[in-house]
Length: 189
Image 1 (cartoon, rainbow, N blue to C red):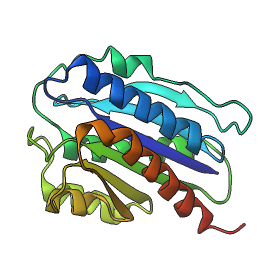
Image 2: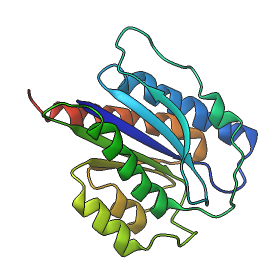
Image 3: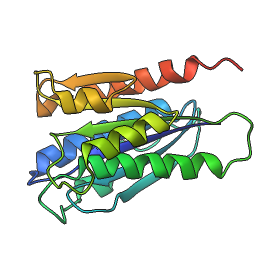
C-alpha cells in the first residue's frame, strides 16, 4: 500500500489570496497523487495539533476537488509556526494510516509545505532529526523563497522543491506531486 501525507503551513497572518493559492495548490496535489495512492491533507500553524483538511482515497477515475475549502476558510489559532512539531506529528499520522492496512509492503511519503522555519519551539531540531532518521518515509519539503535554507534541507530528505514567490506555491506543489510519483515508482512489486 502507498500513502502520501501533505502538511500545509497556514501559520501567521495570511490574506484571502494566500489561502486561496494554498487551497488550489493542495487540491492540484491531491488530484495528481490520488491517481496512484491515497492522500491525507493536514494544516498546521503554531498550535500543537494538526488540523485534518481531508482524506482522499486512491481513485484514478475521479479528478478530486478543485479547491480545498477548509484551507480557504482556515484561521490561524496560534500566530507562531510549529513546523518541527507538525513534521513529527505528520510522521505519526502516516504511521497510523499505513499500519491500519494489512499489506506486506507499506510505503509512505510525507510532503511539507513550509513558509519558514519553526518559531514555536515545541519540538527541538534534534528531536525532529531523530524522528526523521527513524522513519522509513520519503520526505519532500516545499519552501517559499529563493535562498538555501538549512531548516528546509534538513526536512526534505528525499527532495526539496522551491516556490520562488508565494504566488507560485501551486506550481511547486505540482512538482512535489511528481516527486511523490517518482518516490512511489522506486518500489517495484
